[in-house]
Length: 160
Image: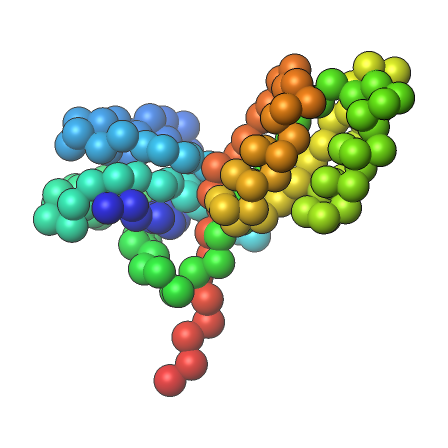
């Protein structure tokens, strides 16, 4: 089962290595991992997407809570969070294919952020499904390079 975790940690040297090491030590493969400071520069948010069963994940969360620099952990359930990812892709583009690439970009609200006579670099943000669909349409033009952030996630405000 896929899980999206948000882990608030003190922004200190070695914390990411300890958190990642704890997951690998428990047999979890980290599908995506993002780390960045929050609005408080002394605190960072680690967003990790992992696969594993509930009982193993519960044990991993208990172990994470024991780490000194961990402040808070949330295991987001479906519908409780909003997630987005960024894809930057360098695509072959010549005078014959450029207009078709632009049309695909328009459909997905993607932006061309750099252009040369032989290629364009495109950025697109969205959920995992949107990123996958965009990639499948743009791939036949020829991908020179790509970078992907993986999920960033924040909890939805829940009304009671």
